[in-house]
Length: 477
Image (cartoon, rainbow, N blue to C red; front, side, top):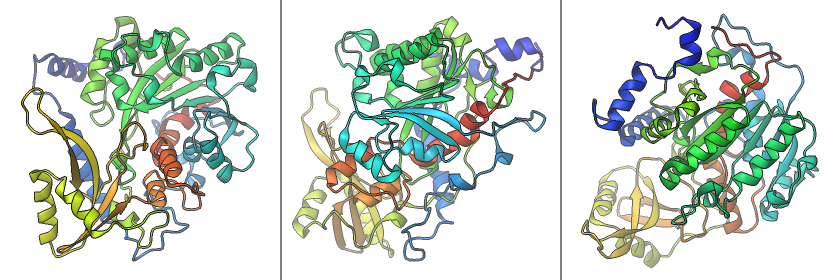
C-alpha cells in the first residue's frame, strides 16, 4: 500500500524497518544492533561537540550556561519539529502543567517559562527545600505521600502531567507481583489521580513518565506492558523513547520517557514517524514493543524526535572545579587504595593515561565483580575507571551504591576526591545559580535522583510544546 495513503499512515505500525528489527530480535535476520553500537555513536558525537567548548581555564563557569543547549528563555517557535506545510498555531497563554515526584524541580527548569506549574508534589522535605530555594515560596508544591492525595487537590485542567516516579518501587524483585501487586509502588496511586481527572472531565492532554531504562525489562517486560496497557485503557495513544543524556551533557545517563497523548486530540503527523529510530529506540525497547499485545501495538506512537546536532557539549574535565566546595582531596594512601582495587584492564587504562603528555581526568565507580567467569565465583570490590571525558551515571548514595570519584592524572602524579556537589549539578544541566543543599549527601541524592535539564528542554522544544501548544491538533494524512 502506498505510504501516502491515510489508511497506511494511521493503521500500519510494522514497516519494512520494523520487520528487519523483528527479524534481528528473533534471530532470523541480519545481525542485531547491539547497545554498544548506539553508545559508541553517542560517544563519537559527544567528542565532536566538546572540541568546540572551552574549558574553565578559558571561560568562567559561574553564572554561565555551560551545558551546550540554547537557554530555554531564548528559544523561538520557528525551529519546532514539524513539516513546513503543516502550520502550528501556538497558544498565546502559558501552558499549565503538574509535576509529580518533583525533587528539586529539574523538569520545571527544562520546560522553561512558557509553562505554568499549577501543582507540584514531592514527599521528601529535603528535596522540597531545594525546590523552594530556587523557585521561591512555591505554594503549588505539596509535600506529602502521593497516596494521600485526592483528585480534588489538583487545580484546573493541565495541558501536561509529568511524573518521574521512583525506580525502586517499579521492580519488585522475586515477588512476581509487578505493578498490580499489593506493593505496586507509586505508579498505581499516581495513575488513579489521572483517572480521577478524566472522570471529572479534566483529562490531561499529555502525560510524560520518566524512569530508568531498566523499566523496559522489569519482571521480564511485564511491568512495562502493564504501564502501557494502563495508559491506553485511559484513552491515550502512547509511545516511548530512551534518551541518553550524553548527547547533551558529559554524563552517560540513559533514561526511559513514556509519552502519552490523549486519543481525543489527534497527533500531527510531523511529530510522529511510521517506524522506529535507532538512536531513540534501542534493542530492548523494540523487543518490548513486539512483546506487546496487538491491540497495544496498534495504539503505539513512534515519536519523531530529531537528533541533537551541532550542540556544543562540554567535556567532563571542563566542568571540574579547581578549588571544590563540599569535598576534600584524598590522602596519597587513599588514592593508592583506589588503584589497588583496579583490575588489570583498568590499570592498563591508568598506565596509558600516565604515559600521555597532557593532564587527564578520569571518573571511578566502585563495583562488586566476580573474580572469574566461573559460575559461583567469588565476588570482590573493583574500582572501574574511564578516561573518555564522560562521567558515569550519577546515582543516589543509598542502597549500597558508591559515590563517583574523580582521578586527576598528571604524569605519575595522582590525585583523587569525590565529585563535588556543584560538579554533580553541572552534570545534570542545572544553572550555576541553583542553591546547593548544605550537606553533601543531600546534594548528591538530589541530583542523582533528578532528570537532566537539557534533555527535558529538547523534549519540550520538539514534542511537548508543539503538541500541547496547539489550539487544534489535526492529523495531516
